Image (cartoon, rainbow, N blue to C red; front, side, top):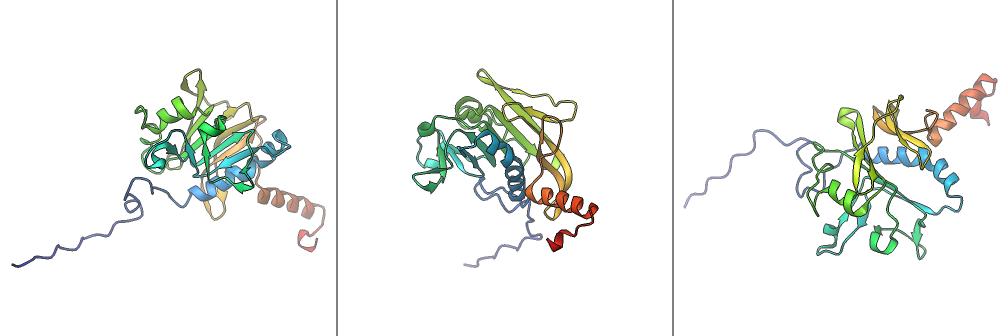
Length: 232
């Protein structure tokens, strides 16, 4: 019996085709700095709202909403989310997940960063679709779908039992009044790349700066006063 070997592929898969083995490994290199940017810049706001530091921020961490086998089938792992009035650690250990039936308090805002075509983030299939689970079960007050490829974000607000799409204000931002901030797209250079980044502003339209950006502003002011910040 002669076995004819399969012909090798004529082209090798690229970075857009490889992370698709199980449908859960669809990430890109922009998501990590995007999460850091959101967390870093909003920390002063959260510390002012929670002087006792009673809040937590999750990034790619599971929110468990029902018991299933395997357990991960009963969870969603938003790219970024914020929960008020809960401690960042439990029994002295940093959280590994957020168990909704134990905590009761839902996230205030959940953000998903689209890596594909956005169908997963907008899926309203009962008990399975991500949009349905957020709207009907986890119920964060705000749900944002960020598409860096299209330089846009959709923000939904939970009204009674369903999400309504928020209209942008005159600055092109989406107000999150309970936090006193606005969410929107900022075209600029962060870390080592220029992209349309998802960022926060205050309610007067001032960009919330990262610690590094604040240091740069301070250094520029010192130079205007004739002081070399490198010598301090």
